[in-house]
Amino acid sequence: MILKAQDHYSSLDEATSSSSSSEDEAIDSEEEILTCEGDLLLVRRTLSNQFSEIDQSQRENLFHTRCKVLENIYSLIVDSGSSSNFCSTRLIDKLALTTKPHPKPYKMKWINEERRIVVNQQASIPISIGKYKEEVLCDIVPLEASHVLLGRP
Image (tube, rainbow, N blue to C red; front, top):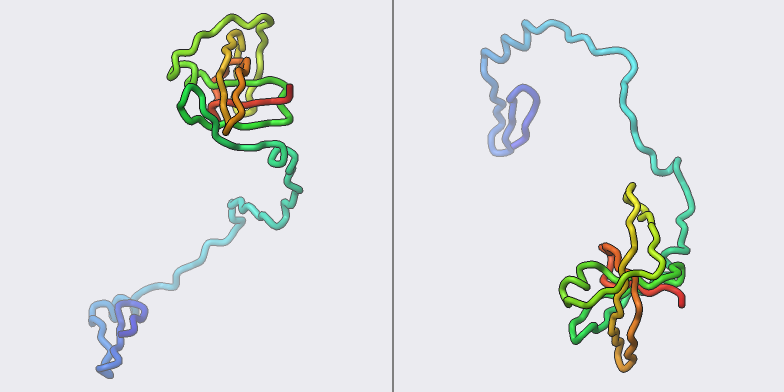
């Protein structure tokens, strides 16, 4: 079956074409439809015209892995661009780890957030990766990407 405009159709099995007589009369009585003229107010994004180089430095400096903290497995990021060690508030809450006041509290601003985060707590996190075990002093922040972020010493 082949569909055509205005409910006309033709079938391969039948050599007939069908339409209703009232529709034929409506087509004959239609007036000429005028097209709209003017500027089209539409913005199109053209990716080929907006070429920019991708900064690979962030991607090259991150190393994602898993670690054990008190026999539980958590995600860990090693970031050579960061100058501190951080752990998530969720990790502290889940494991009920003890915290202590930060000796020098500071404010930091995340990339996507407009407000500054006050870093005023620290915790000692017992991390093990394979046979390597270490107690790492981390600043406590609301991390979303990982549970632990290790920076440069």
